Image (cartoon, rainbow, N blue to C red; front, top):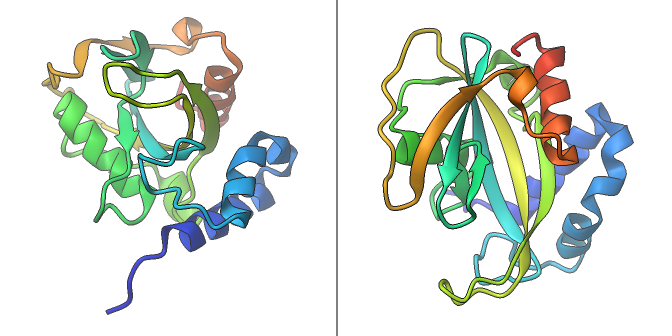
Length: 191
């Protein structure tokens, strides 16, 4: 049995991603530096930056957003990679199940047609958390799209999530990170 090497997986994924989206090269300066330096990007204790993944769940041309209590923001379900997740789409699937109770969504065919690459990769700043005793750092967030072709019941993880909404393209946040994934979702004719 071979062990999973997260840094090799992320480097390969990033290279393949940039072959499809070469115009995004400047978005990954921090991640590329960490990979070059051989940092453990899988460890939550790495306060330069570490890996996360999220699930953009699409149903009836709407995207599920949850209200994250700790960050006080509306986000796609997602979180930290855990041991055993291996590829980051597993992290996104697990987080969708944990935070919203959705267990039967399917990964969008785009991922299967593109080596299971994320549709978007975003590095974003996370402020210092006195409550969690965590320094400020960056999340390297691999974003995956899941589809659900039927109505579904949302069961929120109440310790971390205080609400949810389904938003169309007209209600997407205007920040550059949200607009980057929105453009790709629209290119796939999902929103």
